[in-house]
Image 1 (cartoon, one colour):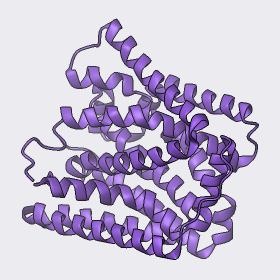
Image 2 (cartoon, rainbow, N blue to C red):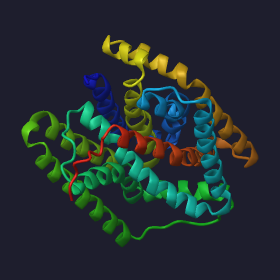
Image 3 (tube, rainbow, N blue to C red):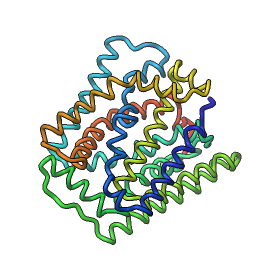
Image 4 (tube, one colour):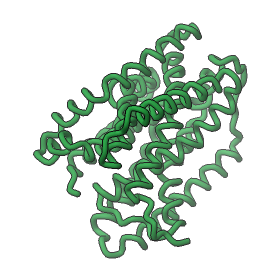
Length: 334
């Protein structure tokens, strides 16, 4: 399968590098507009990247779902999201903790297909290699911003929890931060070492790209203010990579990609994803009104809660895709 690698990777690398430079040169400006990337991602790519999940089973099974199967799928997806959204009112701290854990696993796993099929990385040769890859790619965008920039990340969590009635102030001691960063460093170094082993026969393309991306993500999340960094990552890294994966298995969009018409393929994808992009946005608006949320930070906090609730069923769909497409590889050995 040949996919437009450079078209999809180079703009992402440039965007993250530019965001990091902006954070260094104009920190006040970045802090002022910290929530903008996350808010922009909602109508552009963020909500859309999970908006065609109901089409995924039929495409990978290569047969249309029956009406009953489709109703059950959509009802189960929506029901799980509603239940998990309710958890924010019942136990907001638990909801936040679960979201962070699922986000680490999902964002880490979300890079695996792209790295294998677009970057040319070899499939993991062992269970340890798979775990190291997923944890490294997940901890960098989730744990590092919290550990490096707690003065911005933790108040954002406090605001989010406060919207749902949990009046608390989250803190991290210097010792906790150092231990956390040490754990992340060990995981990233393990992922690099195992990547070298897995890709000995394709060093130049696979190893250098794999290690280069890990180093880019590390530098980006260390240098860039937490909220702005996570929003940029979601907007220009995680969501576009999954959208490319979805387009690769939709015949019309795949044909456009093969012709080099990437923008036309994206437009076709967004046309298909429109309904279930708009519906969650209405959900965000209704919940924001119900919670009397005002201002960019509070609306973004509500959006984060909605994204979190949709992440669980979305992550389950992606995991099923990985299983169906043998992304984890049946020959893994521990």
